[in-house]
Amino acid sequence: MRHPLACRHWRVLLSGRTRRELGDNHPLSLNSSDGVITYSRGERSNRDTADQLRLLIASVTDYAILTLDVRGHIASWNLGAERIKGYRASEILGQHFSRFYPPEDVAWGKPDWELESAIRLGRFEDEGWRLRKDGTRFWANVVITALFDESGELRGFGKVTRDFTQRKHAEETRELERLREALHARDEFLSVASHELKTPLTPLQLKLSSLRRAAEKNPESLLADGKLSRELAAASGQVRKLADLIDDLLDVSRINVGRLPLQPERMDLAALLRDVALRYGPQAASLGCHLDVSASHAIEGTWDRRRMEQAVTNLLTNAIKYGAGKPIHLSVKVSETLAVLTVRDEGIGIAPVHQHRIFERFVRAVSDPHYGGMGLGLFITHQIVEAHHGTITVESELGKGSVFTLRIPREGLVATCGPTAVPRV
Image (cartoon, rainbow, N blue to C red; front, top):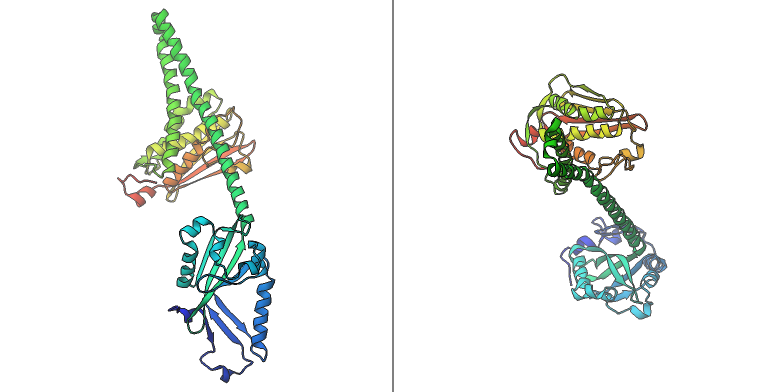
C-alpha cells in the first residue's frame, strides 16, 4: 500500500548530496510531518540508534507505545502499555488493536476508521473510553501515526496512548460541582422569586377583601372622604409592582435567547432622568432619601426610551433600597460622543468580593431578606447598556455607598442599525 504523499511524511534528507559524498560521520536527518530527528553517523550508529530507541520505548511507563502492522495487528508492546492496558506482551502481540475499544465503538467500525484517518492525514488524535484487560474502562488520549518508508510504502502505524482517567474524573467532579451550584442558585432563586411575587399579592388580596366586605355591608362608606379612590390607588400600585416583577422575568427569557428588542428614537436623556426622579421622589422621601438631581441641560441622542427608563429606574430603586435615610445623587452630562449618567448613594456599599458579580443574573450582593429583590435589576440594566453599545461600572466601599456610572454612545444605535430599525441583541 503506497501513500501519495508518503515522501512528505518520511524521507532521508541529504541536502541533495549522497551519503558517500558526506561521509559516514555526517549527521543524518529523518524528516516527518511532525518534525525532524537528527542522528549522528558513525561505525556503530545503526546498532546504537536502534538500541537507544528500543531502550527508550521499553523504559517508558507513563505512555503505552506500540506499533501496528498495516492491518492493525499489534507488532510491538512496551512496559507502559502493559501497565495501562493490563496485557503482557505474550498475551497481546498479534491481536487486533480493536480489542481495546468498547463494543459500541467496534460495532460502528471506529478502529478501522481511525487507521484510515491516520493514513489520509498522516496523524490521528482522539480522546475516549478504552478497555483494560480486566474489562474496566479508562479515559484515553490516543495518537496514531501512519509510518511510511522512503519509497512511500505504508509499513504500519505507531500508536501512543495516555491514561487521562484521573483528569477526566477531576473534570467530571468540577462539572458536577458547577451543576450543584447551578441547582442551588436555581432553588434559591425560586424561593426568592416566590417570596417577591407573593409580596404584592398579599396586600392586594387584603385590599380587595376589605373593599368587598365594605361593599357588602355599607357601600356608602366607600364613597366617604375618597376612601374608594385611595384603596383602588393602593391596589393599582401592588398590581404594577407585580407586573414589573413579571416583566423582569420575561426580559431575562428574552436575553437568554438573544432577543431583547430595541426601538431607537430621538430623546433627551436629561429629561428622562428628571422624570424618573420625580416619579420616585415620594417613595424616596418616605424612606428618608433626598434626591439630588443634576440634569439641567438637554442631552439628546438616539436610544430606546423604554429601555433607558428601565435602566435608570433599576439604578434609582436600587439606591433607594440600599441607601435608605441618606441622600441620593443623580447626574447626566456629555463627554465627547458619550452620555455619562451616574447614580450615587451613601448607603451600605458593596463588598469588593461581590462587585464583579453584581451584574450577573439572580445575584444579590446582600443576602439579608430585609432588602428583598430577585437579583435581576442590575443584570437587566447591564444587558440594556450593552445593547446600546455602552458600559456600566460600579465603585463602592462598605459603609460609604456606591456609584454606578453608565457611559453610552449618543448615536450608537444609528451607526449600527439606522434611525428606524428595530435591532435584536
